[in-house]
Length: 143
Picture 1: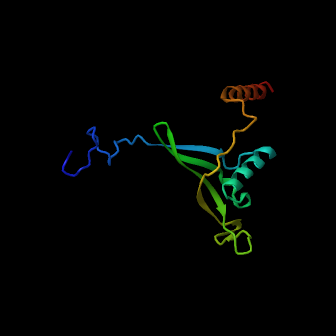
Picture 2: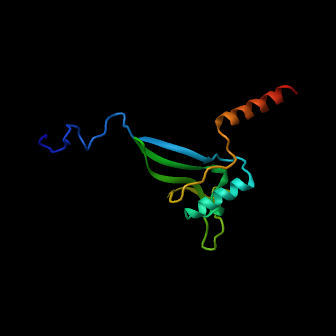
């Protein structure tokens, strides 16, 4: 034990993390800004947002939605949902941006994720996705 009592029994400083830090930050893109999604995907995302006490009507679709967490070894810690939200007035109407009256005013918001988003039932994995992209590209080159 050192005089400052900062060593654990195994001789490692328990109050200091190594550099680089072993804590990883994971960012999962739920929807990219401007991404086209199906009606079913939209409804599934809206159910998830509501389950996490987020009003889907106040989420600016042009900015995307992410889920972020810290990873400590095998554990994911504190998932937060990141998105851009519209400012609304006391009547629930979007507030116009004074610098650009053609746009609504927005702000970045983070909310603890309580309910995780269910997996997309139509997703068949990266191999199938990449084959589809290659097939689409090949079909475009044949024209």
